[in-house]
Amino acid sequence: MIELRPYSTLGGGHHGWLDSRHHFSFADYFDPDRMHWGQLRVWNDDIIAPHSGFPRHPHRDMEIITYVREGAITHQDTLGNQGRTEAGDVQVMSAGTGIAHSEMNLEDEETRIFQIWIMPESAGLPPTWGSKPFPRGARSGTFVTLASGMGDEEALPIRADARLVAATLNADQQLDYSVAKGRNVYLVPATGRIEVNGVVASARDGVAIADETHISLKALEESEVILVEVSA
Image (cartoon, rainbow, N blue to C red; front, side, top):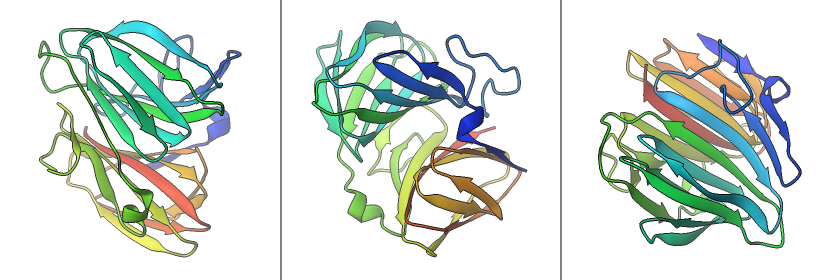
């Protein structure tokens, strides 16, 4: 089963400093048919204006992944962690028993991010945060695992039976991804235009996949693909 969710159908809106689109029900957007996809709970497509951002706010028992598409995001939290994550790189926060953080665009340009929330395997663990650079050149024509709770050693660790991978493809380049039975996939082309098992998706469209053990991607133009695999 493959369901295309065009960008134009996503919830959200423009809030002055923030232009946000929600692939799943979030904040004031509610769609009973788009509550989650397996353990994947949130996929927000955010454009943050220069010198603005999310002031300090709390989270609990959620795995939160921020993939920076353009610009940079600066993180600070109540554990004393702070860091600046640039385009192409990833930060993860395991909220655990509770953590408050801010995510600010301190740059002179817009910052564009995907913020992805995955439900953890266990609740009540100590909160953690981490960030790591992942050069886009290393994922040319292949998937690179950026965050994982499935034993991928080079990835940032998360406490969920899930992984986030990314690839960049030239026009007409093809790439396959295998999925075990009982698992779901959600993918978004951050840029470009792709074909997924015969379904065409444009930049920032969502593609929800279930009951498929083989995913075949073809880039119809130069594209960047972000894919999350989760337990159903």
